[in-house]
Length: 286
Length: 286
Image (cartoon, rainbow over the protein chains, first blue to last red):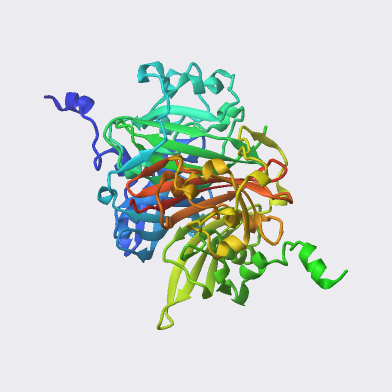
């Protein structure tokens, strides 16, 4: 098979994909990692917060004795930019089934001084060591088949929020949550989408950290536009995702005092709730 | 008025109450606070996680330039015990409208070595500086009037989970979520209650950190018993609570792999959603 044809049909794999390369970290010293933030994950004018969380999550997976993020809490301090960055980690506690650590992402100002971008506190474990019992009343989001959903490339006009990151994601949004793209936001703070990586790489716990913060913000359907910067984002990874596309739903119920919460659920192709998140974001009312 | 009669009718106030005394911290050095964990907030055999969070939250309110917790993420490391403890805080970033800091609660082992109990990462602001806009689809929990709800003191037999803390709280649980107390758990992961402090002290942002983790665990209504230790708990305080009783609802949808999430909402007497939280807890299936 000619190499070009192979490249077209081959799917990227976990460990060998754009997402893996763009979230790679190189250990400079014990617990200290160099990385390069890619311009490929920009949304509006900001480096996507889920992508940044995956970079920090990868550093912690190396620094801690356990490899899977169970619960990751991130406080966003200043806006990250594409370019070099350093992640400094610290082990808080190494337990038998769970380890806890901190991670900080730093970049550099014009004088070369470090500026902290994000501080993370996280507990890691081994998802494969969990019992496979499930008792749930949660149900996957109801989404039309993928071919009846719409991606950024289907938009008649540029969609606010689509930019570099749109080329790296497979997003197929439920038309019921796309009123904002036609100038008629529903007023309901809901967004639902099929989700994958554009190169076909399957999901893993690190890419779930991206998935919870990769849809257009619910604020668009509430009738707000512009940037909705994250103050805090906590993700719980509940299960290792099965291969295949994910379904992501995000919901906002309460906008008050210039802040809103955005709750995300991520479901895998085996109908398992694989991740839950909540973020507190600040909004500017127009 | 005789002093005894006054004591009976006087309500404790914010700043002068059992909760305030039991969460008090004394600055030993910049950012370092001594405290004494009270045995009065034990539930089953553990010091209540919400009470502990309020102690940490009070230290951060002193250490940071802003006084109100906006978003507090706590990872619980080891079980706290009544007795002396020290809180070590660190300012991560002091911004104009938000400040971020860390806090750690330490106790001592038999050799006097410090053991870390809880690590917190939190962003603080000024709730009174927020605009009073509200756009919400959230609705307060539907609860019967307080005199049709039941507290620990109404139980025909000792309720699992009631112990010292029960004397310090005004809990009036919705009978619809009390099946577990009669040996017939509903199977639904829901608990709803009126909530206050027993001495009548009104709620403030610090006591909301207690309120989100003070009800009997949803696990009881799922049919599980025993301790459900918190791994991670994040609280968002959305609004300064009005005087009067609070309503708290907690919900679990997904128990899987020995972990469950517990989402709490706290509503004030003015029908404002004043706090939201989610915790990840581990369960032992019987």
